[in-house]
Structures are given as C-alpha cells and as structure tokens.
Image 1 (cartoon, chains in turn green, brown):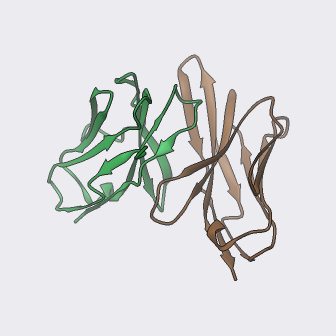
Image 2: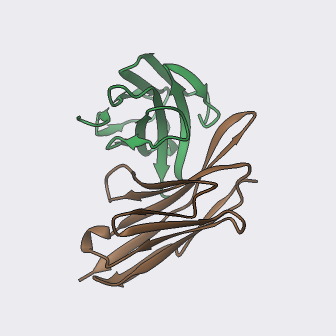
Image 3: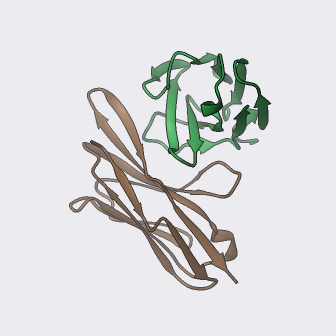
Length: 114
Length: 114
C-alpha cells in the first residue's frame, strides 16, 4: 500500500494567490483529516470527513480556507487568497472508522506564502 | 478548557539509555489517548492508542501508561536508539454530544546521541 499521498510536497506562492493542496487517502479508509502544523501552534485539526461528508470543520481558521472530498479517493484543501501567516506544513491523514481509530498521516505539504 | 501539557519540551540522552516522556491532560469527557512519533520532515506515526480501561500498552521498545484518575500518561522508551530521535506528540480525544474533539500536546523533542 502506498500510504496517504499528498501533493505537492512543497509550494511557494505569493500573498493573494490561490493555493490548492491535494490528498489521496489509503484505499478502504472512510475518514480523512486535514491538519496544519507550525512551530508556534503545533499540530491543529482543520477539518475531517467521514464517508466523504464534512463532519467537523470547526478548526478551519477562516473563510479563506475550504475543503472538499468529491469521492472516497480524493480531497482538496484550498486557500484563497493566501496570506503569509498561512505558511505551515499541511498534513492529510486517513483512518478506518472515525476519530477514535488510528490515523495514518501523509508526508505533508510544506507551504510558504511570501 | 481542554488542555494537553507535555514535558519536558526537549530531551537529550545517550544511545542505549532509557527515558520517560510525560503527558498531563484536562480533557473531558475522555475517550482515548494516543502517542505519535514524528521524524523531522515527516508526518506523525501512531505508536499507541489507549482507552479509559487500559493502563499499559507496548509497541516494541515503546511502553505507554495511562492513569485516568490523575489524568496522566507517560511514554517510556527502553534502550534508546539513534532512530528514536524525533518529536513525540500526545493527543487526547474527547467524545461528547457534539462529537469527537482532539486536543494536541506541544510535543517533546528527543535527541539520542551516540
């Protein structure tokens, strides 16, 4: 199994630009999570989906952030417009079952907004 | 307010030595507690997950303990190896009528020196 796949691995963009991060969960997993990690705030849960439906998006920082899961094998996290304070590593994770099950993390996307 | 505090923030030990990392939480109502290992530049990897009724759980040289009465957990690493150098993150899950919620500790950065 390839594990959770994220793309791109690195993204450098200018303030105001749209950024789209992509995730392919492990096949057969029905929950998907988006996290953000910074030195200052550590790891934060942004949103999670179960069976492609957003269950909890209370961690999404503001309206500039949106996430979709059009099917069981693909999800996107979009930031529009991006700001320098969005610079972070964004992780996608998947699990069988919901929050109480073991989550498997992808390698992350390192985002730098100039 | 739900909180997870980890100590120490950082730790340096010699290869072959044992060490213990601490996690204190005030999360309620408690659902489970997980320890993750995160190598530099990679996503977190689950080490253990414990529910209320579990006191100890091992994963190779890693042993996690949980005292639900005092709301404390520890992660003990036996005969440390250079590859144990990483950040260790404690995550506590709460489950109430609003659903599940994860609270993350700030992590302990462990360095194992030869």
